[in-house]
Image 1 (tube, rainbow, N blue to C red):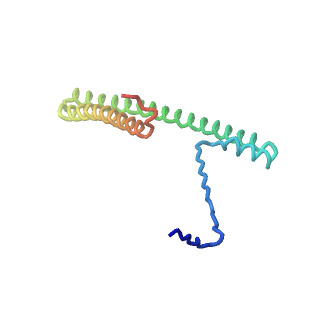
Image 2 (image 1 turned 120 degrees about the vertical axis):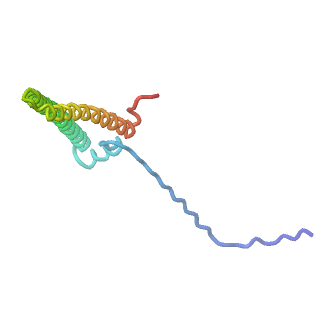
Image 3 (image 1 turned 30 degrees about the vertical axis):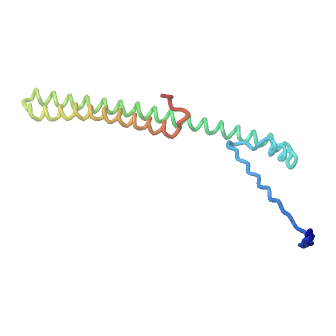
Length: 145
């Protein structure tokens, strides 16, 4: 009853194990291990990389300051030109009314006032829309509800 069957021999079995490692980082600087490796390859390599990142950051900050200042200057200049145009239009409208051209004065004055109101309303709308888009783009900076 108890016959033992011999086990078949398949020969040596080769096993292989694949290891995959994935690293992800964000930012301008390499990891500390990579900086150490740069130091081994290039004299003061890590220091040079950090100085490069610092100078690039300072340059970017300076450019952003210049852009913000020029945008503010452009906005102020636009407001002055708009004020000047409105004053000229109202002055012309007043002169036309005094000269007996009431219909022309009403049209010129009315369109000036309506155009000015429309510019303010559309400006507010675009400003709110721009802020909403920026809040969507950077959810970590938007206020919590």
